[in-house]
Image (cartoon, rainbow, N blue to C red):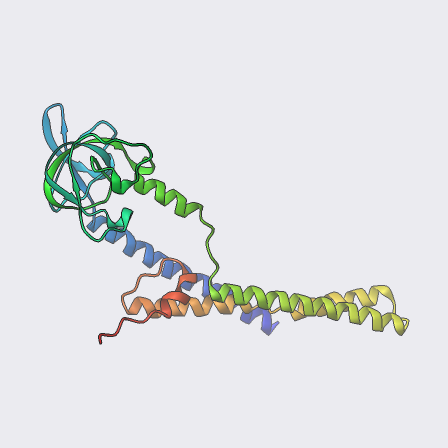
Length: 250
């Protein structure tokens, strides 16, 4: 009875701490998003106005200049000494020169499409007028994001170790049940008594508190990281973030 009460207390404590930590992380992320709210300068019906970047639609005419981020993918209509940092898409360390000239060739990559501007790439020099051709998931960045979302998520080292431990425990419990049946039948014990004993032993071999203890440790780690001004949205990421060390200067 005492064991069950302790397990219940640990479970409730883990749920409360986990929900509180993830709630605080979600609030911090929302606060950061509100501070970094992007806007775009558009020309509609001959008049210029500034609107939230998420309200840009295909067909809008967007005006960008040095210091701005391109709010959506678009065809460059006019350009004045335009340079855009496309390192996030192409890996190039220097800004790409852009113009409004036509291109030749098929299946050109983002780095070769010099008359296109891509969403979330910063303008480092010059200015341009861009006709929006894609927003959200229809952009080059959205395509990459979709590919990343379709990529299977790799299990963390702790998760893999827990799965391996679970397999070992399951195998040991199954082997113990077989040995009990063999020994019991060699002593002419009843089938029902053997079955109850084997099942009871298998249940007892499973560490019921292991998931709760693991989650509690991760919750404590999340609290410790929060004190160091690190935002942890998912508790399993505590394992990897807690092992990160700042780079040392030579």
